[in-house]
Image (cartoon, rainbow, N blue to C red; front, side, top):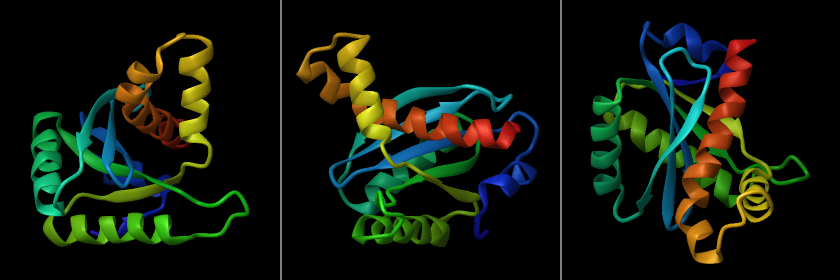
Length: 154
């Protein structure tokens, strides 16, 4: 299964499938899950990264448990629109996942997702720095996935 455009992703899903959103960091992977109607993204968990094989085993378990039909990976495009090393790393992660699974994958521009979530957690939720660190990755994944779901739903 190739990497798909976000607009064509919905056609690859079966009724009742959910979508898993990923915010890939160098140390963690934030995860968010959609509802089966593809309307709402909810934060799920944060995986501490180790070896790719271990990370993939955990992702595959979640995909099975949650009836995931596709992945949306946040693509960390620079503010000037260029793709740097982090984008290259994210694209390689997708290639590695596709080498082991048949799941459709789409990318979503994640510019400012983490900073938007940080502002929300500081301003509205008034969370401590420690608590923000615990939830920011999965909240950023939900922010990324919600943007993709909004595009799919249009």
